[in-house]
Image (tube, rainbow, N blue to C red; front, side, top):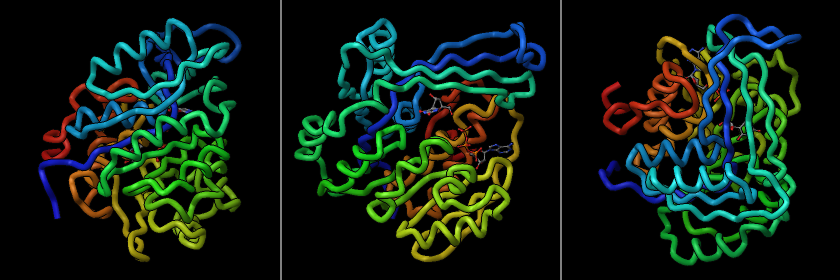
Length: 307
Ligand SMILES: Nc1ncnc2c1ncn2[C@@H]1O[C@H](COP(=O)(O)OP(=O)(O)OP(=O)(O)O)[C@@H](O)[C@H]1O
Ligand SMILES: O=c1[nH]cc([C@@H]2O[C@H](CO)[C@@H](O)[C@H]2O)c(=O)[nH]1
């Protein structure tokens, strides 16, 4: 069943201030490299929420910021873009920041993240906000969680009887393990190979097929396992499906995984099943690879549908 009107999405997770450097020559680790620097909103939940708005999906974003200039700038920009924000401002913390250094070819040389405002948050930080949102939510709501949330908070949120479906993104190799205690509560997990390795405890050279088999034995109902330029593996209703990524020029890889999640979630919100939804995610990833930063300027539902 597909429909022009989409289900609402409630995204809970990171709100970051991203600084992305594009070096004019290969990054020199021991000295400064001439580069162009761009500052943009970031954080996995924020990237996906912004993309969903562009894709015509009514989206609320729940997260934590500091009491600083970055928080004011982000709140202004994100509200202007059409997001409904439900944000906790935490005294004594800085708004989350991500810093990425890209080589001229677009590959990531290094990245750092300071997200103590969320990773050191008490597990009940969003209880009041989530209770209010849940009271007004319908059964078709998609709750999107990212693994920037502390493990105890993930257990608490997924333990509530939230009306609708639960979709999560594993964020990074370091943070994917936070989802270990909640895998059987999720309707769908979006993750890449490195995250699957840390989540399953298997070795780095394990094939994607073997990672997928191990993931299917964790209690997960469905997942989308990406592997950069290699095939995407999708588990739905006990069956494994395979999709080839779309060919495109690469400006930088920042946000390709987030875009794939956003395109897929937008299609789920429009009533597509998971295997029908993933091609929209692949199109969103390709659009993002050929633009700078986490959100492609030309992202729209029509652009995905006609890619
Ligand atoms: N080198 C590439 N060539 C073609 N497609 C790519 C490439 N890298 C990424 N993609 C597309 O983006 C999707 C997600 O990529 P990847 O598995 O690297 O996710 P990720 O590591 O979560 O991304 P990121 O952290 O950069 O947002 C892939 O499934 C593919 O569709
Ligand atoms: O630990 C994290 N690292 C990176 C991100 C975000 O991912 C994007 C890059 O892939 C970028 O927006 C960054 O803030 C995050 O939310 N948590």
